[in-house]
Image 1 (cartoon, rainbow, N blue to C red):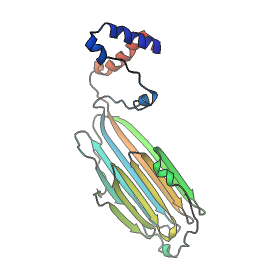
Image 2: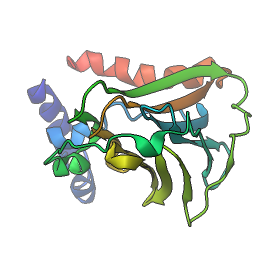
Image 3: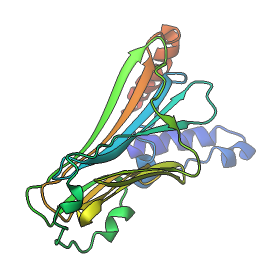
Length: 248
């Protein structure tokens, strides 16, 4: 296949004026460059809305709960995404202050924050704990964008904080992304969930007993189903078909 491509390029170069040959000099793309192009093509105007929902909750042995949910919706003709946040909390049976402090220890894990793509980690040094990390991508077609107003209050540059008998939750904007942390009371453990340039990180550390933790991130995409004319859709397929004559 490469030989045919290079022969075609040489014949084309020979038929051009001398000044044009330098402009159209063929360049072979490396695998690393091609990897940056794969799966990144969408027809112009096809995406009409894009949303993110991120939530984390921590429930301790006394049934006290702390957590938060962050929502972001980006639509056509919207110049800047906006994040909305609300808390999910409860004080349980009122005995959280009497829970035995977590005695477990977890070491290492600093490299988790340096990974790319989707990273999910759940580490436990206690007993009878339950931890769940989940990511979902939801794509649907529609004539109109999703007009649902996100629940909660607008997330400002100062961030969001809330607390209950179970612990404290903090939400911050971080360099083009979003980060949520939970610090559970009585040294029961902690949660970190972040979405940004490096991808998605969901990490839980459980130091005490009988805790239930949930991390969830959803990406919601709405694609326009009443696209332009059939000819506009087939133009890219026709270009690919023309390459078949060269054995590609």
